[in-house]
Length: 249
Image 1 (tube, rainbow, N blue to C red):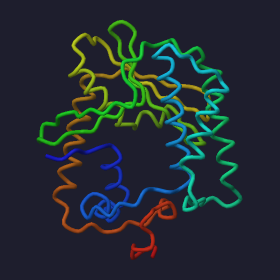
Image 2 (image 1 turned 90 degrees about the vertical axis):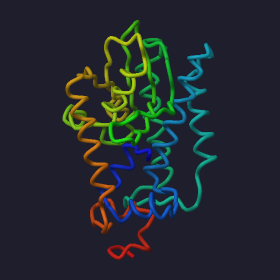
Image 3 (image 1 turned 30 degrees about the horizontal axis):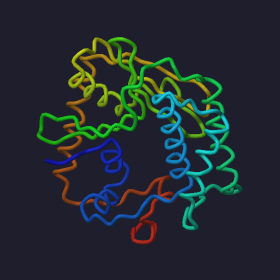
Image 4 (image 1 turned 180 degrees about the horizontal axis):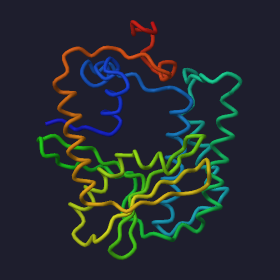
């Protein structure tokens, strides 16, 4: 039995060689691109913001920026790579602050949902014996309707087309349906911080069954793979294994 996550499956699809290094050879090298770092930092700040609300300790806008700055300064190291030309670490820090402020102004006082879980650490049992890792940014509810929420921190934001191809929240919705006895409806919600909007879609049981079947097929393909070849793409400059990859090293 193996625990598979959305990012694990996605890594194989992007580059089997990187997958082998990370998950089979277990050569651990944390992703140190500025994009990954800023995404992690924003998620941590939003987690604390919602946690404060959940415990009736409402954070002010200044509190949120202090939380963001603390996580940024604590996590920032000299080995973080800035790939985009003309951009600096300071530029990324400022943009991250803007995204958080937009979110704060849009959703304050953050009482639209009853918070059930934050950064969940659960597993969805799959038909093949493996498990799917369920890490929901924010799980909320209104009566017997549950909301599976995800923060998107990319600078371009997301669109309706993007969410149509998003499989991650669908798998999370399956876990909610199978583990929350009082659930009657599950809504998937994506927060697009860069465009200051959110998108929603009802989780359809029939679609989720097909989605689970597709995930199981992808896992079977991974487990039957014998040659984990490197795949060159636009993601290579952001990869932490460039110096040991035959196509980029």
